[in-house]
Image 1 (tube, rainbow, N blue to C red):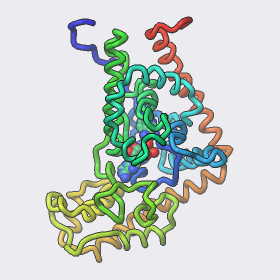
Image 2: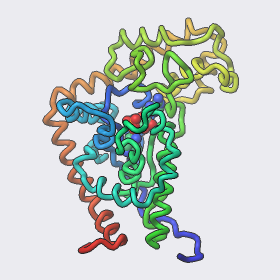
Image 3: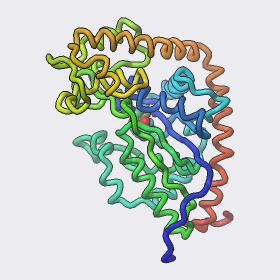
Image 4: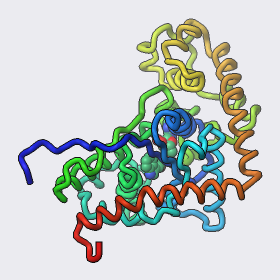
Length: 344
Ligand code: TYM
């Protein structure tokens, strides 16, 4: 222990994020995550993976899982990720994630995990029947991030608490092993109107893969008719759109639809209201439907194209896994030494 303030991480910047292959992707995943990944790859060294080890914290059919992984990879490519720029790989192909996660399991405190709201939501009333993996899930997530010494993590707002845990683990590891600044304290990149897309049926519930109503979400694989119908049937309210964002405060459905429009067109909610303030949903919904179809149509079309050639996807994933292992191995070797393992 020293009295000095901990040194800051001084290594290069790196972006890392991932998506679970546990169901069809929806507009929330696209705007909260995929669009940001594609943008960031031009600015910072970027690692994007398919979180298949996280997916099996709840039951996944073994006959389907590898294909679900290819589907997420296809969505990454369709959203504009370029394997020449970003390292794209399946998590399970880099076993070092699990190795570091074990060490982190011994760094993280039960009290920290007990606070995780996503575990409470996902385990529901029957916590004792959940897998142990579901409970330690955020520790594996910290290992995903820190194994590459990632400094920036683009995610939707629902991942904020997991990112705080990753920072706490990094800080405690650096402290316990007397290695100030060894791991960076990763910054979540959450800002923007796409960070929290809500259900089309309930402006207070998150758009989610697990919502039983398919009308609640726009799937990346929906065709133009389905998208238009879902926007038309989206819950709204009888009032015209306001002129200012402040006035959206007690109108969750209106706020959500304006937010979706803003995120899809890459502008602020203020800018959307400058165009549509004073107009009713009879005018706004068709404009939103047209925008959603024009934005997502090419993405689902590209996804279908990539999925028609699974061998090419596998080639990209294998090459990405190779690069990721090369980047992960030195961290695990150093950590083993710091912990004092035999032979390290
Ligand atoms: P997952 O697979 O649940 O979701 C993938 C990404 O989509 C974002 N997202 C949303 N964004 C806006 N509005 C919504 N309604 C919405 N729903 C989902 C999520 O925030 C996420 O960014 N634990 C992660 C996967 C993961 C990970 C990591 C992420 C594992 N290891 C390391 C970052 C870094 C998850 O379950 O995402």
